[in-house]
Amino acid sequence: MALSLDNLVRKKSDKPPLMIIYGRGKMGKTTLASEFPNPVFIQTEDGSGILDIMSFKDEPLSSFEEVNDALVALASEEHSFQTLVVDSITQLEPLIWAETCLRNKWESIESAGYGKGYIEADVVWREFLAACTWLRDNKGMTIILIAHEVVETFSDPEREDYSKYKMRLHKRAEAMVRERADIVGFINQVVMLDKGKTGRDAAKAKGSGQRALHLTPRPTFDAGTRYDMPDQILINPGQGYDALAPYMPSHRPAAAEAA
Image (cartoon, rainbow, N blue to C red; front, side):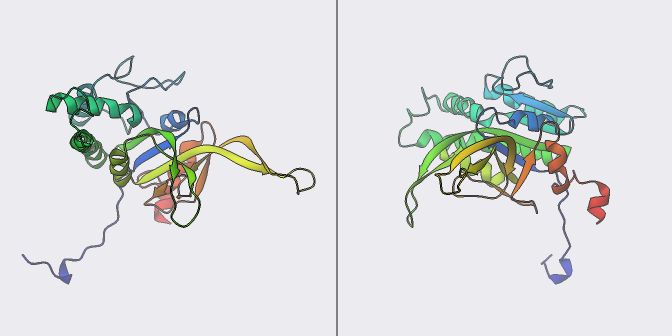
């Protein structure tokens, strides 16, 4: 049947988000993710510290096959988990490269030459992201992908070069996961400038100890969201999820949805 204006329907997504949290070490990425409702962790590194979390093994998963087994278990078995946290996709990437090499019988991701290995790795990345999306769409799970950061020099054609925080991933993988995400949040310490007693002294940056999740892009970092969210949200220990929830579909209280 041919489509016409009579087929128009009003749509509003109430799916939980697929969210990326990245930033420097010890900024509370894993702690924030652990505050989400009933989370289960796929750990590719031991970054949970003293947090009490549910994970698939005592030690980090060491192959993409194990990561895939965990995703299949969440898709096929009955459970009450509401949030999946992958900690981290930075350490997942070497497992994806190893899987790519195994499938193609390469000694290393570089041995294929001319960047072919990283192009083939896209296939495995798509499988991983498709599984995460399936869990979001069919199991109603919020997906949180944690990543580490790297500082790169950005060449701006209109001004001087400057440094920029990016996810510590190959550029192809970074672009792929960022495109799939509903929220890309950069977490960092809130920095204040101290101009001295006279106000004419050279300004010095001072850390306040307060963390913030940045949700709109700036010259020094990438961030973004598909939702109506503020530029940044202050993150306090034990209260980070409560600060984020009012802005995310399927997390908003019923009264807020009705308003």
